[in-house]
Length: 45
Length: 484
Ligand SMILES: Cc1cc2nc3c(=O)[nH]c(=O)nc-3n(C[C@H](O)[C@H](O)[C@H](O)COP(=O)(O)OP(=O)(O)OC[C@H]3O[C@@H](n4cnc5c(N)ncnc54)[C@H](O)[C@@H]3O)c2cc1C
Image (cartoon, each protein chain N blue to C red):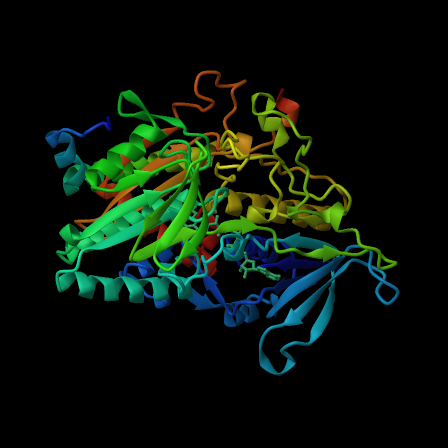
């Protein structure tokens, strides 16, 4: 049985003001992923 | 003076060429060999395929940019690799065939000190009988011209629906081992959203077909992510989104043949079934380009360079799924036999898949191949370019920039519909891309950085990225500040 978002969650997903804050949050999350950077794995065992 | 040759002006090749030109002084030569005259931003093809963008938004000509940046551009397609040279040229070279102009059909030898193979995948439509775009009611969105054709067909279908006809739409993977589920996922949701906008949604049954064991596997083994304060799996996410947009689904299906409006598939349970459609978009399998390689004497050494895709510093020892580890994944993208050859992006041969291999009772492998999306393609290209620049600038062979997909994150933004106020997207960040069960025993990923959200903001992010990456690809002011 699929998870169904509630009516309120639906409202939040479509509300431009709430979504503006989500946009900022997601951009910060993406920048954090970028900031962690990347490295090898073999000498880190 | 050093000469660096890059093959393939796609996401990774173009990233590599941009950073090499930035890092190296003009006394060093940077050469791009690619058959297409345009750069294309592939992720926006799904919007071309629903008529919300045209190719003008997603492509630009490479020759003027490369001329301005002092990058030699050879519009040709590489056919063979000669890493030891031959009796005429005493260093590595590739043979390429011109694809345009008065030299069309002629071949050229291009020698190099360093070579970057960034040829991405071959779209292997031939691996599935009847899958060629434009035949049997199937289209593709893998290139901008395919996507333009897809929109033409979809538009014609919408006109039929307006007249009252009920139609069946089938979108997903067109091969038992296809990857790039994300692109098909975006396309099916954008088609659904467009049909609603055109007020014909009730006239269509929309079905997803995929080789994934569970929805939302996306070839990265059904990740678990943070969803607000709760945890959510890719499966739950996929089911939620499809339920919300009224999309039916068929999973664990290996499509092996397409006839006029009919897809034939084998299930993981070993049953043979078929699904009819009026409009189908099925992602083909991706394969290597079938390049051959020769040593100085002309002996075939393809096995030293290629394993389908190019051999790099991965651990290719066959192992069961339970023994896979992040250490299997490459971190320098350097060919072990020829240390001046590198393969970032999709061009490198992965050690194995990321999703668990599964076989039907008939022995058919039905599971996704490992995806390498835009972010890892760009990151691996940049680190290869930085390593080569360092080697040239310092005169050493030291490799200092490493980047394994087991120690690298990615952001995946999947559009679910276009429009500043009525659009939407699924936004996921994941760290690492390849799960590391030693470091993160519960889910294989760091839950602080592996999160998901659905909503309008996803559309804004995908659209912002579209403009940012085209700015970057055009090497406009401060382009290098935009991360891969
Ligand atoms: C429809 C679609 C949507 C996508 N959406 C997203 C998304 O939203 N986000 C995301 O991160 N990723 C997305 N991807 C994946 C992304 O496009 C790939 O990860 C990326 O393009 C891989 O880069 P690459 O440089 O390795 O290969 P490519 O971009 O395919 O580039 C390969 C280049 O090599 C050239 N070439 C091929 N053969 C030769 C030859 N013989 N000689 C010389 N040159 C050659 C090709 O012409 C091409 O220019 C999508 C893919 C598709 C198909």
